[in-house]
Image (cartoon, rainbow, N blue to C red; front, side, top):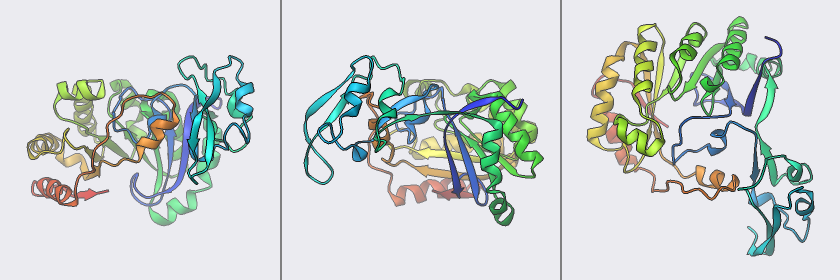
Length: 316
């Protein structure tokens, strides 16, 4: 299995929110869900994708190399605009609807305003990176978290990384939406010390309408993981107008009761707007969810609601 490759869009060291201790999180590309509030929209696509970061761009007058680099002529000078410093500037405009993600424009972009997201890496390459951080894991009780996207959409690569991490004595966590075939989930059970498990919505039809898939498979997999002896850090994104009501949290509490013995902690994740700029980088002009983040008072109420049912609950 030395040559097995995964498509990765980031490896983040010194993470303290993806499981116990200091961790390094490996982010795999590709997700079957389409949460409109996603804070990492670059994780959704399964292929390497072109991104553009406005703040890095020098403008077509000062640079403009991307205009001639595109073989299909899909990059043109945009209308007059203002830079972050308030200076007049014209940015390139990319016709992303016809782009084949070849990366020619990114290869000539010296400030890396245009860049490709998604690298094919072997398990050997990833492990060399992870082993550099092992002293921090050992000192803090941390380890490695395999995340996404949905890492179980690359099941063989995820399994290989987990096996290698365990052979090196590392604590392992799988950050998952739970929307994956049971055989993929079952295969990682012996090598995953913890599942960071998303529960986005308890109403299956609402889940389907907003996120694109129903939730039955997610809930079934959670029950099976619990029955098999797996451990959970349950993650609930608290989204205004979607799942933040008292009634909806009663549904959460009812389901969590079914897997209570397997739940180490429940983590409430208040909605934030940090994903908006990342959506813009993908140049797709897709509609996204934007709202005011939930108040501290609301978050405390929802924390207390689950804590009153006997669960340890944190807010991040």
